[in-house]
Length: 86
Image 1: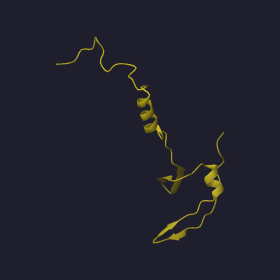
Image 2 (image 1 turned 90 degrees about the horizontal axis):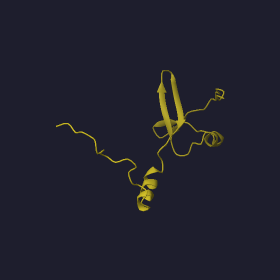
Image 3 (image 1 turned 90 degrees about the vertical axis):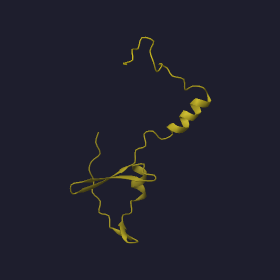
Image 4 (image 1 turned 120 degrees about the vertical axis):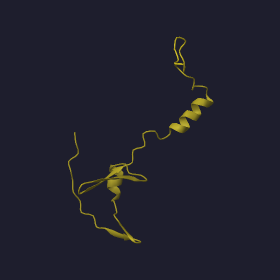
């Protein structure tokens, strides 16, 4: 089920020499926005999306796998019957 498209008027606020917007806390919570947003510029539109970090935590997980000896290759790099070009 798709979210219904909603419109909200938000005033621009001065931030130094720039302009910004305030996003209400309820919207931040609803869309799980924590630290940053992805901004997509389209013809006549600016789209703000929560940042997607699909590989977040992988580095630590790989380090832990190495410590526990669980990072061995399942398939070798070279097969016995592999022929290399000369």
